[in-house]
Image (cartoon, rainbow, N blue to C red):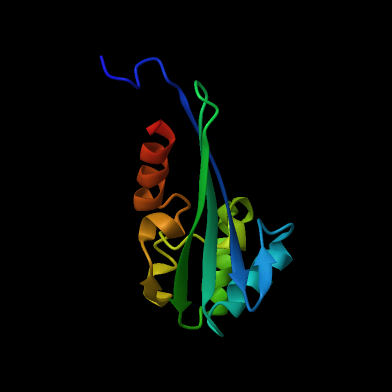
Length: 135
């Protein structure tokens, strides 16, 4: 039994993609998804995640942002069409999941962690969890 026994932590987060200065959330249509995906070969996009941890016992709230930059080569139209036809692109910020096997051949590099790209940077999250438990 430590001093944190009985404490409950609430972790909340959300993520957007920033591309050429524009904030991109989930595409609202297949056409918007195509437009998003076509652009990523032109210049890098950046994921920006906001993470908040609240200690429900003490009310202490800790927050941080977590970012990563993703560089792609041009993604061919037939690959874009396959991604859009699958439909999962409509449920993620920026319309593209880097872990998708169809995307992998066009992924040049990631600056930052894959966990940050996927929405919850481990190092940032662990730091916030620890901070929320400190008195």
